[in-house]
Every structure is written in C-alpha cells, then in structure tokens.
Picture: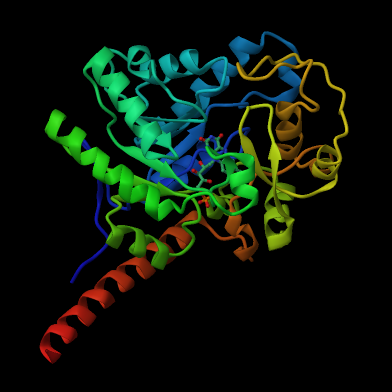
Length: 370
Ligand SMILES: Cc1cc2nc3c(=O)[nH]c(=O)nc-3n(C[C@H](O)[C@H](O)[C@H](O)COP(=O)(O)O)c2cc1C
C-alpha cells in the first residue's frame, strides 16, 4: 500500500511532508511553528515584523533582531526542527539570514525576490536553503548563480503558484485575468530542471508545491504528479495555535470567494488580500498618510507609495482590521472553522494516505481486469 512519503531534505527527515508556509507580520511565530513541527511537519516562523508595534519607536534593528532570536529559541528549546521565512525584499534580509545561521535554524525559506547571495550569509553553518520560485526561469537563475559563485545548490525548492497567499511572483494583470500558469505545470517544469542539477551535485533536490493545496486529496494529487512535499499556509491561519489575533482568523472564516482581491504592494509584487475598509480605500486610490519609522523594505520608496504595508499588517495582526488587511490564499472561502494543528494535520495525512492507497488499489483492479 502506498502511504504518504516522508520529506527528506538532506539529513532533515519530516514524517509528514507538509511545510507550514511562513506568514509575515506575526501570523506565523513560534506558537504555530512549534505545533506544526510537533506533528511531524516543518513549522516556519516569518522573520518580518516580529517586534511589538509599541516597541518599534525605539532601536528598531535591535528590537527586531531580539524578537526573531527569541521566537527561534522558543521552538528550538523544545528540541523541534524550525524553519524561518526570510523575504528577499527586506532591507534586513542579510542580517536575518545571518542570525538564522548563528541560531542553528534548520532551514531558511527565501521568497519575494531572488536570494542570489544567500549561501554567503550562512557560510559555515548547517542551515539548509530553500528558495521559493514561481517559474522555471527563476529556479534556473538561482541555481546557476549559486553554483557559479558558491558551488552550492538549493537543498530543496518551493514552487509557488498563483493560488498562494501573500505576495506573488506573477504580474498583476496575469493574476487578474486568470492567465497565470497553474502550479502543477510550473512544478513539472521545475522538477525536470532540478533533475539536471541533481546530476551535477549527486543528491536529490526535493520539489515542494505551494499555493491552493487545501485537502489531503490535493496533497495526494501533487505527490502523484511528482512533488516531494507541499507548503501550506492559508489553512494554518485558522488554527488555535496560529499566533495572529482572533479578528484576523475571523476575517478568514467570514471571507467569501468575491472578498479575495489583488492589490499592488509596496513590496513591489502583487499581494492577495481579503477586502475590507482599508483595502477599499487603497483600491479607490486614496493616499493614506504615514510616517515611516521602519524602513523595512529595500523595494519601497515611502514618498511614492500610497500606504505603509508594515502599518497595515501590524494593525491587522493586532486585530484592528479596519486599519489594515489580512493576506490570504485563493481558497480562504472554503474555511469554516478553527481547529487545532493536530486535527488539521491528522485530517490531511489520513485523506492523502487514503487517496494514494485507493489509487494503487484501482491500478491493481485495472491490471486484473485486463
Ligand atoms: C497570511 C499570509 C501571509 C504570508 N506571508 C508570507 C511571507 O511573509 N513570506 C512568504 O514568503 N510567503 C508568505 N505567504 C505565502 C505562504 O508562505 C505560502 O507559500 C502560500 O500561502 C501557500 O498557499 P496557501 O496559502 O494556498 O496554502 C503568506 C501567506 C499567507 C496566507
């Protein structure tokens, strides 16, 4: 009987091939990450915006650094594996990556840009590196550049499709017109490409699919197509253990399909969000005044953008949904209850296993019938 396969990223072996996607600005902190790792998946802390809003008026760099270290240590103290999601667009990308290496983080998952110098920042550590890509081209640029400069290749790669939450590696019009390629197609292209790099480094480079994976049957389908694992985020927001405010979780429970929209973000990429008062103001082109104490993004010019994404996400993380917004994946409308991480992972694994063994039984029957 085929059962759900473990996800092996070098010597990191996950019994459950599910990575919990990093969710920025206090959505995935140590509480959620620990709960996922306890269940055999990989819990991931998002490094962006972990400090308390009221503290940010002080020495921002030290406070953010201390907050990240504290969250990492809370998971590591339980003897659990932990990943950290670092956004390449962050001004502190290098600093956060170096902290992760120093703190013995198991895996850095790098999205929102091409992490071309990442191997340099973790040199001498055993931290594994997993870039997030949305195209074969992105994967090739990273691999060629890392191999040329550092003789290193990714330990695994996340392929993120247009149904994912947060910032997306597609053009705004591709997303709005529904013309962005399907994650399944991008995954197959990236998998084929990784085969060539696997020949170079003589080891496996697991391919992990992200974006719109919602049920155990989705996981089974991706694995049958050739994925080694999945990265899921939207479903983990509505868990008791998720670090974000209850109002944020409630926005997930209330969201309809029509509430999901795409906005231009100061990150320089389109972002998928749930409509609310604040989003309506942005969509209407209003300039929402702000002062910028954070300087968090390399890609943001505070004099040119019409709102501060850090303020908006910090407000939402605190439950003030009228002054901010929740980011979400396309399937958010399918969520109808809050569950524990244990319940969610058990449901996903049970269903995936049933689908995988069911399809094997059907194959046997087909062979017997012929
Ligand atoms: C609320 C929210 C916040 C997110 N924040 C980040 C982030 O800070 N960095 C990042 O690389 N991806 C971020 N993502 C993307 C997820 O890590 C993940 O890859 C994606 O959402 C998976 O698709 P799914 O939500 O349909 O499961 C975010 C997603 C959500 C829903």
